[in-house]
Image (cartoon, rainbow, N blue to C red; front, side):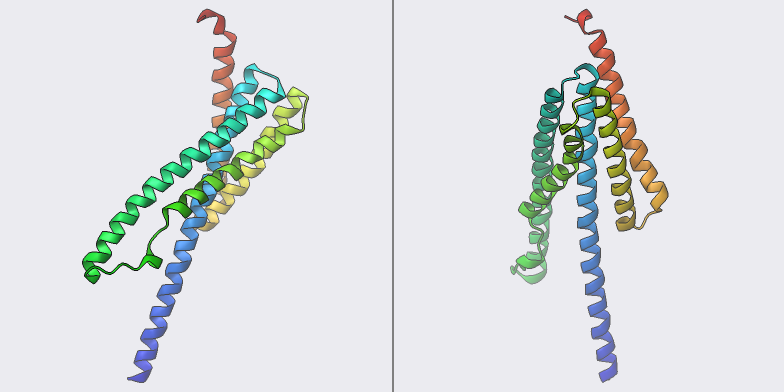
Length: 200
């Protein structure tokens, strides 16, 4: 009987550890995805502006505006989403425990919002830092593409490891997706910029 109870306790502890690891992995994966989002959207914005304006200051300001706007958007979206989850879990706890709420088991909307904004900002810093110290236009574009490519491969690998997905396929998907976003933004902006006088 005693050994049976010990076995049950061990199983419960293992389940708790597995749950904690799973929860941590989900948070890390969300952070990687947020950083990837910041990286791709900011780099694409900078490439789009770079298609029609070669000035480094304009490029950096555009990237910085994209960083701030994106981080705010991510934080607000995450706050609203997690607060909805928070309300649902509180209601469920009250039904199950007869009014008691275990706050330590609830998600934190503020923490989630801050983590999301921070992850986006870290990703967005990659193209900004890459472009900040290069005055020559063509070299600057090359440096941004190279830095973003390296970061995309790294984020793709991290996301695959945390999500237990095939590493090569996942990294390639992330890389090709990032390249496409930059190429499409650059191409369309160049096209509209070169024919802009027609719409004035």
